[in-house]
Length: 212
Image: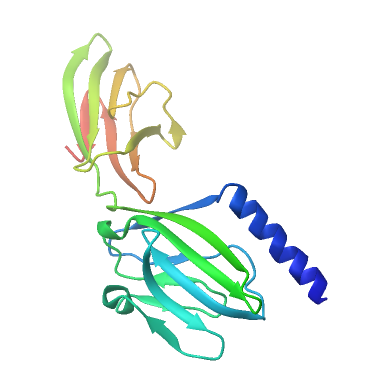
């Protein structure tokens, strides 16, 4: 059994040294995230170390001993679980960084695991505006504008739960409506960590109700 464990350790280590694969995780400002090592922590581990930004040691946990924190900032907002997972609470944008856990076995063999954590502001409620409104013969032409106050987001429009393939990347939706009425349009805005949606209703005859 010991031989099998040693082979497993060497295999994981050799893969890491060839090119340390970095796991990508996202979090939200004021939220909580669990940084999981992604491999079982061996029962025979002697020491676990977590690092922030490659070199700044957050904590050290030796077998059978309490967690020792090297960083006061993280001491007040992290928790180490038995499986090596590091929980970070009350996330801030400044917590975005590359984290590293090093698992050391009884022979001093180390397994480094890298995690890139990116923290994003939560997506606020989108604001919808009706512009370029013009009555046409038997219908209505209009541009619906969807916007939020943060950058690096994507916009997706839906018409009664069906995705609109003709919406613009900047959140604009240009429509030419005829005899339609009682239609709900939803704009969903997302970043890599969260989404938010707002709705507007077309009542017919160029009449709109909702976020304007």
